[in-house]
Image (cartoon, rainbow over the protein chains, first blue to last red):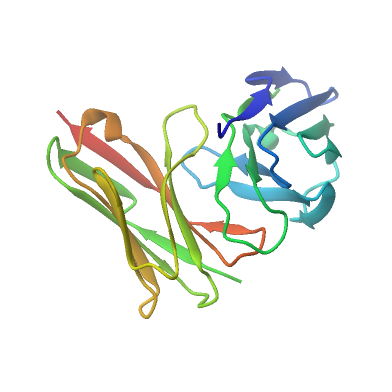
Amino acid sequence: DTEVTQTPKHLVMGMTNKKSLKCEQHMGHRAMYWYKQKAKKPPELMFVYSYEKLSINESVPSRFSPECPNSSLLNLHLHALQPEDSALYLCASRLNGGLSTDTQYFGPGTRLTVL
Amino acid sequence: GENVEQHPSTLSVQEGDSAVIKCTYSDSASNYFPWYKQELGKGPQLIIDIRSNVGEKKDQRIAVTLNKTAKHFSLHITETQPEDSAVYFCAASNTGNQFYFGTGTSLTVIP
């Protein structure tokens, strides 16, 4: 089973709202990722958690706040977003959190619209 | 850092024909090269991958070739079907946690 699940599938929020995206995997993977994807573009890396610790932060604005409560769960907390933050937010996971050539598996994404 | 270029950006083929998508990378330390297929409104799905100790890998109608000397790798789809229509992304990784993606190829298979 190579399933990464994401909730919700769709989210519409105003610029003053606070919401959270959730990602879950039960494959024992120790690296988890958040990507942002605009239409017709490749995924753009936001954050990487390795063994539940933040290992990569690609200079993402502070209105995006990641959290990794345990090895199976990854959250992305959203606050005071801008309309240009509207995109598909993808979660991915990988078996090893360290140096390896493991495959990265993606979830179905959350389609976010900021009004 | 790594730079991955992908060509062509769009590709139309007749059903039953072959499709080839090419990627080049810049960092000789990259040693893992996955290919993803993304259908509209869905997340990228891994379709095939190759590691740098292998020159070619095949899975039914899909194959990937790797030329480490020239730093390029290619995706080959034979006997294309309408359900192969999607956006395809190549990527490169160097054993670390970061994956570098190509810009994508939109493949249309015409029935």
